[in-house]
Image (cartoon, rainbow, N blue to C red):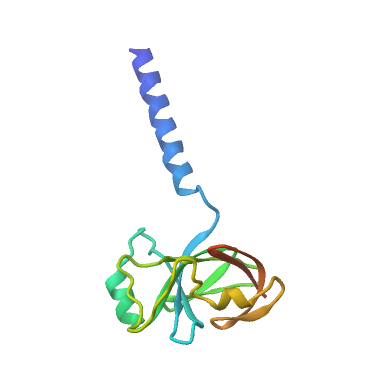
Length: 152
């Protein structure tokens, strides 16, 4: 009887630790960057709410005629309505080769070839500064399919 209680307790503790480890697998926060027709990042929002849900239809209604990119925010941020604003020394990895929303539709006439960058990342070199929403940012590194920027 004591053995069964010990084994059950051990399995419950192990399962709890495993679930917690999966939710804490990354220190970053998943974000969606909203890009306008001129390829400028106009907004940044959390990928999911506190319950882990994401409503893509409501998101597309809030930002019609825009493109969306996934990103990973490492650092502190504050929420401003539905948007988020990274605070000093936050790092954002922008995945430029992934569609953020399932069935993401681009504007009529947009044509992209494999390997195209949705942001003007081809023109940036590490150290270049630009605007990311309402914040100034500096490009830290650029690899195929991703850009790493630091908010200043």
